[in-house]
Image (cartoon, rainbow, N blue to C red; front, side, top):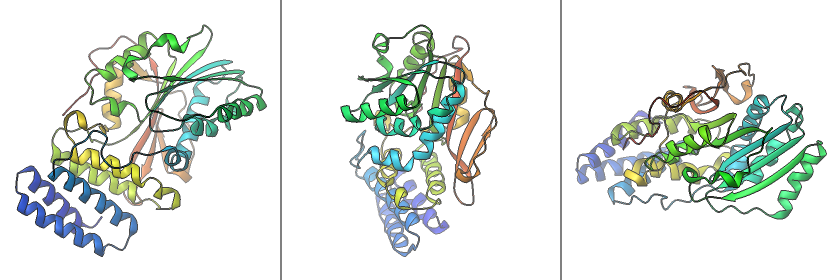
Length: 357
């Protein structure tokens, strides 16, 4: 994004923060003018998203789930297809040598069938696996047809693996009824949390309660955590706005293909929530890898780092200390998403709840 556009957006945000509507209006006009001059489609769309978010903030529109559409399963399936496979490879590494595996999936904003359709295609690499139990904890309404579930089971049977597939509706991940998971002796238990933790930070003690259940009640062997690697949980609006500009500029520098266009509602929603909303209405509370690492260690977890070697230059990924970072941006190459694995270590040193503002 050009410096003149960044300058106009920042000055508009500052004017709103310091109660100067006339200056904010003038700078918004400059932003829209510069957006029309922008020749690169991705950058023009990004400018418009931030302009819309600032306009909503100026008008006092701060709904928790915003008026922009949230992403459906098509976004997750097409845009994050590679991420699904990456998570599947992570799981296959940590369960290698295990015959019976129970994967507990926390499902939010995605279709669990579509994700596991990708992962099951990789089951040949899961070593000695003979029995896979998949429990999907669904917080939002997701449609699963009986035919689709049966197809998943057939795909697993083709690989000589018995698959049990169960969908459990929950009101909150913080209040999971563990008895519904039917924990069994002899199973290696994996909890998979994709883009879930950051959305729990707006609710007091919600994440702390979930981590306590994972650590003390669910008998989990490994927990997979996937999150955006960004500092969007700052109470200072201007600092948060500046960080979001840099973060999404890196994301939008990548190739804007047809599949990428399916991500538009998702990014539009995220930017709108980060910029326009405050308090409990701001649910997109992304944190950096360093912040998540500190929080999880304090909560009694340690990094499961037995899988250091990773080679996948095509997807611009790098791995260090057992953590896989997915890079964004043609020039900057900053980490935008991380995939990590954790095991239970000790009792927590202190509260894991994080709720900056």
